[in-house]
Image (cartoon, rainbow, N blue to C red):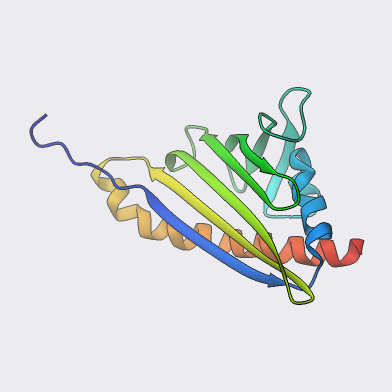
Length: 156
């Protein structure tokens, strides 16, 4: 395949030292189909199928301003970690993504780490848009962790 350009996968990691307890933070993320109930960065979230937790649970995420993504849990380590495989709609500027959320007790709160890997759409154009998408996603995921911390503190 002469002249093919291989697009590297993009990688973002966001961390937050949360004041809320690990159990309170986990309770919000473990309510897998309902992320939008405490984070306004999404239009909505809903379960796909009957399973709402554990490996195999699925949800549809309606993104702001447009687009959607179907997420499937691939790792569920109770109280500590959730990984997902994500299939975006055609209006989302990447082909596929996967995430890893890790929670660790930290002093009087929680260290939350959100790791996101995705493949931009658009071949060579994706190389140009990747850094812009990284910046947007970093702000989005930073906001998600802040909103979760605030909601978890209210639930303690």
